[in-house]
Each structure stands twice: as C-alpha cells, then as structure tokens.
Image (tube, rainbow, N blue to C red):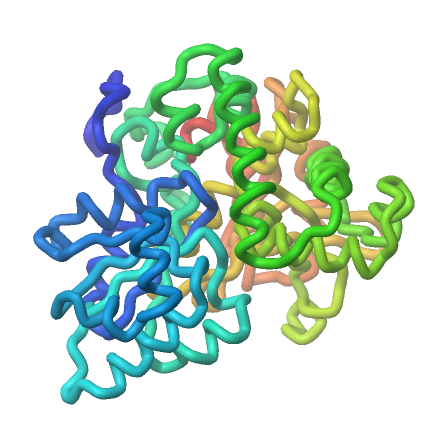
Length: 417
C-alpha cells in the first residue's frame, strides 16, 4: 500500500466502487450507480476512464427533466450510449430505457449508466422494470482510506485470506496514520465536508443545507410527506438511538407519530440511503428477516448534526466501522453479509461478517486500554459457532496491537479502517 500523505482538497479522490462499476459495465446493458445525495455519484460517472466521451445528462437540468417527462423515448435515443443522472425523478424514463434495451439485439453492454439518490432496488416499479437488464453499484460516503487518497476500504477481505496467526504482523505493517476517531466521526464521509471543508462551522452550514434539500426536494421525488417537521423529528430520534434495536413503537411514542407513519418514514430513510438497518446473525437465514434489526446511519457526520450532539460516543465509533464495512461489502462481486449477534440473555457482538461460509466477529470499544472483559461476549460467540468463526477483532481507541485471547486480535481502529 502506498503511504498516505496530505490530500489536495481540490483533487478527485479515487473511489472504491470504481472497479465494481468497470466490472459490471462489461456484463449488463444498464448499470445503476446508487447512493445518498452528495456521495460523489456524478463525479464518479463523469471521471471514470471507462465512461469518457459518453454524453452525460442530468435530470437536475430542467430541460432534460422536461423531455424525460414528455418525450422519454426521444431522450434515450440521443446517443448510442448515455449517462443519465438522478433517474428516480422520472419513473417513466426507466420504462423508455427498458424498451430501448429490449429493442436492440444483441444488447449493448453498458449502454445506459444511470445514477439515483434512492435505492432503486427498493422502488418496486423501477426494480421490476429493469429486472434482468441492470447491474447495481452502491456508492457510500467516503471511507477513511478513500479520504486518504488510497481508494479502498479497510482490509476486511484480507482477514478472510490471511492466516489468522499473521494478522498482528500484517496489520502493523500497514502504513496508515493514526487518527482521533471523534474527529473522523464528526467529519463524516460526504466528500464536501470530509474532504473540502476545514472547520466545524463550515461543516454545520453544509449539513444544514443538505438536510433542507433532502427534505424539500429528494423526499418529494419518492413520496408525499405531509409534515416535514415530523419527519425531521423522527430523523433526530433515530440518530439519538444509533446502535440500538429499531423499536418502531418506541420511536412513535417519543415523536408523537402513529406507528404506520413511523414505519413509512423509516422505509423512506432506508430507500434514500440515510438509515442503515443491521440484521441479526442467525444460522437460520429466515430468522434474520423477521428479528429486530439495529439502527445506524449512512454517514456519522450527518447523524451527529441531526442528533444535535457534539460529543461522539461509542455508538458513533461503531457506526464509523459499519459504514466502512458496508462500503467494502458492496464493492465485492460475491457480497458478504454484515450482521450483529445478540442472545436473549443480553450477550452481544457488534458485527459479524459472514463470507464464503466463514465468520469474522468484531467488537468496537472506545477504551484506550482494552481488557479481557471486553471480549467476553466474543468468546461466547466462538463457543456457540465453533470452527465456523475464523477469528475475532477488538477494535479500540488505544495504540497497541496484541492477542487479547485465542484468535482474537486487539488493534487500534485506525489500523484496520
């Protein structure tokens, strides 16, 4: 790995998702790049070498959006290949894209590259229209290593590839700078506040504008919201519960909203890549779907702003690790599962990664002096699942890397992320 140094705030940062986009361009006639607004989707599709010289049109342009509404068939035939930005604004455009793809034989791979600030897989009409025609890539906010100019996430794949006995040596060989996790959590991963803005005041101004635009424009493209004040209150209540079980009844009681409204609002937050629901680990995969998930946010900086809190805690460090894990997960051809583990007796492991039959257990602690007590639940998890558990990581806020118990490595969080 190239040593990380200062990164020019004006530079276009290499993105982890770039390679995945390149791969799927050679497979599908439609490539959909999804992610929350302002994660860098437009920049990615306009700067990727494989997409150079392809016309770029955005539905943020009123003329383009008007044509998408009244004459979508003409729009999709403007050029042999097209990049179309923010397609969730006009669902009929996706129908025109489907027809254009189906009329052409043989199909041209990578003919249409679409971006959307909503999870089109969760939008039934769109996902059904593009079924069998599209590959999907999710662009999450910048990982720490993307912010360092390295274009990667933490080396999670390597924990499944390296011999466990070499983890300590390999981790300590990584040439990445130490960092204060509180500062990283407050900055978040959206490119502008994370990469371009220097002060807390500047970032607060940016987050305020982001939330206003999200509420008043992006959400209205997905669903009519009767009361934006109620929706904002639900966002804040959710951000104050990061890392907790997602109890919709409790959220409704605390925000004064009926449970069906809470349910609908949470679905919209997930569709727009704000809310991240973390499912529980179970050998029975059906149970993962019906048990209660935990709530996290797509960006720690935005979550801190929405909550009104100024001092990050353990939940924010967990969230920081999770956002790195899901960015890595979604860049893989065969996607691992990222889950949590919790027993009826209250034993809990923050994250469980299931990859090709193996399990990696991860605990996250803000302590600078990790102790044997910090891995008690991880030991219970290993006893429960035996040889399926490849090993464990205790990510902490200190400086030392050492084996805290058999096959469980304690290491600073910044050595991995």
